[in-house]
Length: 175
Length: 248
Image (cartoon, rainbow over all chains, first blue to last red; front, top):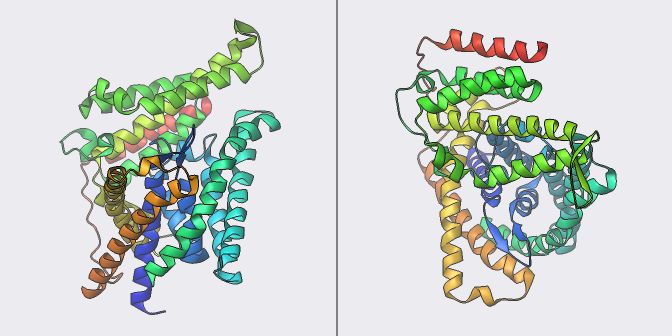
């Protein structure tokens, strides 16, 4: 790998980390609940940057949050938030972006693969977030699923649909 | 977002070495999460003192943190309703228990404290100093390219405001073209996202080119740290509070 290539990847993954952080503040009103773009950007980082640099950008985002910069949803930050009741979703972004990137890297960059990779990524985020929420707040399982997963599913389906097109366009811009 | 920008001053917290401040911040967050009422009151007194020294107006603070306080209130209510124990208030068949209210109040207190500590830190520390300190802390850790991480941090801090400005530009441009009448939800999601991504990627591309043109590499002059001399005292105090939070 030559220096120029690495530099570009460095800049891109810093950009994606900033997009993920900004995604917590950019809300698009659809229906009763505004949709926050944060996890769309996490999945896109995996699709566009691949597993390694995707992981770097999510890691950078979490590092900035852990250092106390207000990059988490609702404008908060700090170690307390990272290990608080909703910390599972944030830490779940790490395996999610890696798996999303790995699937799209290994199986080719088609729309079907992209969709599958994003579905897998979303499932990992919930797989980490919901049990964490349950144990952090001592909620019952069904309550935790209803509070931490069910309300977000329609939005996630929309984001996956939008993400497939967005990934295609960004890949063209990046070339 | 004005709450989290650096404000130059000569207060105690401003003068401290950044590395010491970062250490104190993480020690205090652990103490806050771990401790009971006694260490919490101690930390609250310390944070309040620092906040007064940095001259932040309480009303401004409250206004900027409106959403955060709403979240804290929700945490408090859910805690007091879901924890078992002797019921005190009964409303529409939902009862809040004494144990729940105590637990909820303690948790909300911790949340607010961690938030305030973050504000004190970001108000008194230049972003470039944070970058330098992170680089210094990452140096002994193997397999982590510390200079590259530091570069990514400064790029991140540069991109954040850029993205937010461009997002508001895109949304205004689309409102002017009657985008808000669009019914298809996928299109509603794509129309603002795609131009935003395109714009930011183009600026990232230009930045990478500019860096390359200037022969940018990982070999850079290391950041310089300035100490105020009070670091050992402050660190000792933080360790004391941390120890106290495990005992009391």
